[in-house]
Amino acid sequence: MLLILSPTKTMQDNVDMTINETTLPLFLEKANQLHEELKNLTVAELARTMQVNPQLAQLNYERFQQWHVRKHKENGIPAFFSYLGEVFRGLHAADLRKDDLLFAQGHVRILSGFYGILRPLDLVLPYRLEMGGRFAPAGYSHLYGFWKKDITQALKNALQEQGDQILINLASNEYYKVIDKKQLAAQIITPVFKEARGDGYKMITIYAKKARGMMTRFIIQNRLKDTEQLKLFDQEGYYYNENLSTTTEIVFTR
Image (cartoon, rainbow, N blue to C red; front, side, top):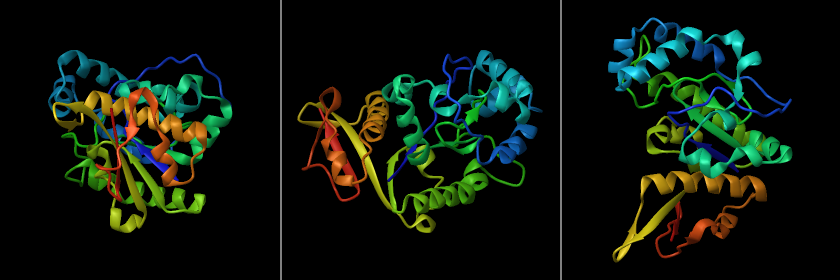
């Protein structure tokens, strides 16, 4: 069973943690290709391309000026600890045990507009580059074209290493779209989290994001191997809703 997550727009660059089993991103050289273009954009160009305010554009301009492949081993932070935001608050990697992190290393992948795909212990430097954003690398009309083949192949390899073809999609639609589902040839299950509203249930983005992180933590800590076991998830008031679920979507409501 392989899980996919989305990154977050916000990251931290200083984490008080130590683990020796860190790795480097699989596509660090391709990230460097993007960096060679991004570092030449002005603050104003970054603001327009990323659709952010001048302060955020300045921050990311400085990050791209400081970013370098060689800095990863010395200054990089494992991806699981680097991202902020609701998904990673729900995951709360800081208090996972070492054996949990090593299990996650083999069973979790984070899709990224800048690094392509990341394992939990891959060392990263702070950046901001959304997969569905306006930035288009030279020769491409968008980042989806730049990354689709590599990300799909990396997921195929990870599934083969595990000996099954089960992909648990906990990523947002923006990032999930980068995968070539036909080439992947996997059984894809998407957990969906909804809140009671009026006479029905509605997905509230901020809650759904945190729940994806909680589900990731649940799978890691319990070493789940069977999709039926996902239905046991019952944290923070969620429960499996058989009436709303399908063969491809497992719905949890509260």
